[in-house]
Length: 361
Ligand code: ATP
Picture 1: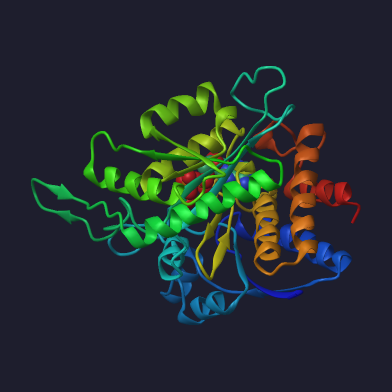
Picture 2 (picture 1 turned 180 degrees about the horizontal axis):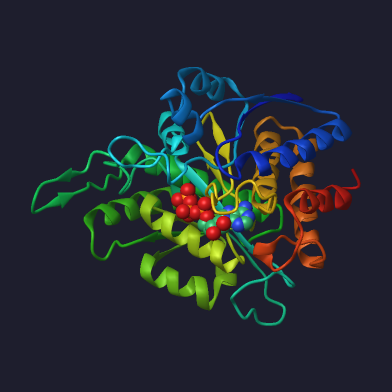
């Protein structure tokens, strides 16, 4: 059993370093108490790095990310720093493509006491996972779309290879959640198969994978209806799997239901590598003020522990992943130490300290 892991850390831009520091501190203390090793290696990349050096994702950083057991990434990009063609610096998207991180995992969790724009019926909790394919779909021609005077074109690509891996991952996750008592074991394919042939292909591949899992349930939903159900009955979902652009939009809707980007974690997972990062961006409007919410980053770190533990059969890491998530939930539920995006007055360090206190570390 492996019990020592190297983590590549992208501190990133804007609030990135502010939320990374306390997160790495929490992980370091958890590892010390849990008897496993986490070695953190800082790797430079991002908009500020590009402004200084002309490189957004240096070769050496890419190599360090490839060599690490897992990648922890805060937020990268600044609206004020752009490539000559006007697009923003987003090494996180380059990483997804280079490391074939096809499964964008976006948990949506709302428990009693959590701020949400929903009116949750008595006794209802929301706990589902949206999986966004993250390497193809409508992002296939990203940066290469054809634009002429009278026309613009982007191409949506769905491949058998990536879709099969994606659906296998989705059913695997549904099984893990079922075994952990967190879901009924159901996967929903979100598509637009009634209009586009590419989505009928996507759905047929989903059905073929579903047939390999007679112990799990499966169904389909159109993306427009899914957006409606996110608001009307989100407690009905377990695992949803969808195309890149649909997933991009639905994951922000999911973050909104959770009360904002400050509490929305994510993971981008492939066959050999994984990046863990909050759903939010670098929030330049509040950078340097010490008031960014670190919870999304800390919850992403909890997902990293869970993934490393399951992958390397190390139960201590899996247990600490759950402990860390539950500690964040307890702090939010209590509501005494909240950052301003959640209606409180606490700063980043204070909010992270409340999590440490909850963990007894
Ligand atoms: P990107 O396109 O890079 O994802 P974005 O344009 O969606 O970024 P964000 O940087 O995520 O924008 O910020 C959107 C809003 O949410 C901003 O007002 C920002 O201050 C706020 N916000 C984002 N993350 C946090 C956080 N961790 N704590 C508090 N507020 C946040």
